[in-house]
Length: 181
Image 1 (cartoon, one colour):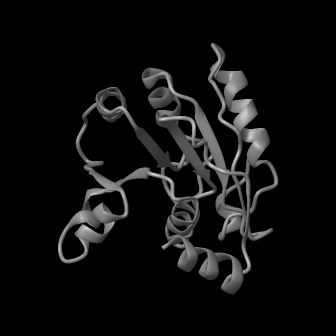
Image 2: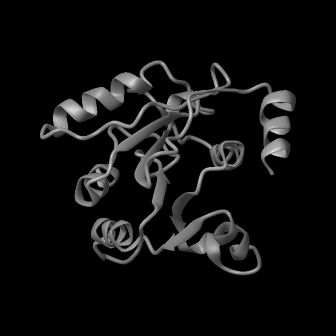
C-alpha cells in the first residue's frame, strides 16, 4: 500500500509531505486541518499508508452502516453517534487508557462547514489521556501535507491554541472560505 499511496499522492496528484509521524511515541492525538471537503479523508488515508502509521479516526455512525461500513472500519475508523448526549471525550480518553498503543486523528473543526472557532474536544482528549498533539496540515494551496513535531500541552489553553493557530496560519483548504484563522 505504501508504494501505491506514494505513487498516487506524490507522482500523480503532485502533493508533497514535509515531516513524519513520530515512531517513538505509542500514543498521541493528530489534529489534521483544515477539514473543508470530503477529499480530505482519502488524502489523509494516503498519508497514513505512506507513513505506515497506525492511525485511527472517529466518524459519524452513518458511515459505518452496510454496505460499505466495513471499509471505514478497515481504514481505522470507529463510529460515533453524534446525536447521543454522551461524554465522548471521556469515552475516547478511556480508549487511550485501555490501549498500549493508540493514535487518533481528528479534525479540530469538527465539521467541513465554515466555523468561527475550533471545537475543544481534541484538546480535552489529549489533556485527559496525557498525550501530545501532532499537527498536520492539508494545504490545498501548496499541495502539501506538513507534519509537526509532537506538542506537549501546557497549563494555558489560550497559549496552546495560539500555538495551534499559528501553525495553521496561511493554510488553504479545498474550500478556502470554510477555513480562516
